Image (cartoon, rainbow, N blue to C red; front, side, top):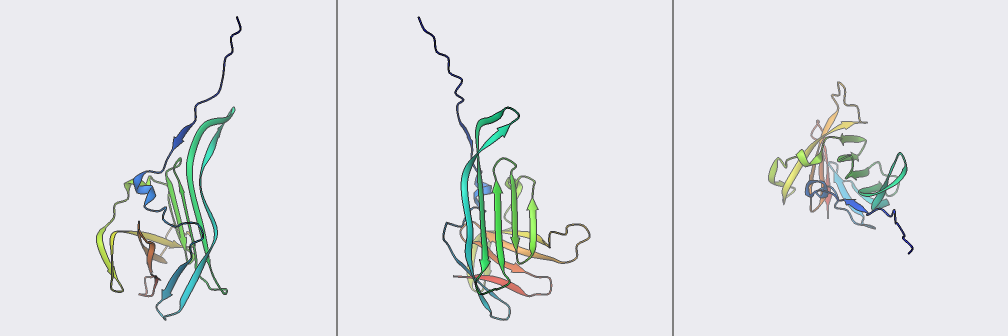
Length: 173
């Protein structure tokens, strides 16, 4: 009698939670348009897009546990100054957003974020479940006086970046 034993590990998947999915809303190949306070329109083209399951590696090699990750990066066409990057990681439960040199890393569980506005009207268009996130110039959290407010929702992603001086960048369709 021959006995075969298998050490094959069962794969486990760590998916994004519903709240994390609020920030996973751009598709591959998508371009975006934003207009600023001076009526200059900038088109952002996608430089990279990644949404995948990545296998976790432990002390003894691959674990068989797969974690969902998402990253999207946009840059303005024609040497414009606007850029957008969003990273979401199911394992670390983190969210990282950067737009126009303003940045926020929410290492705390994004599931704790609550949409402060059930609806918000911007430029005559009404958006539902809008999140407002404080953004820091160049990621400078400590004693930062240069902050902006990012408005974001699940359906459209970044809707508006509002600067403290009243200037703003708004998404246009």
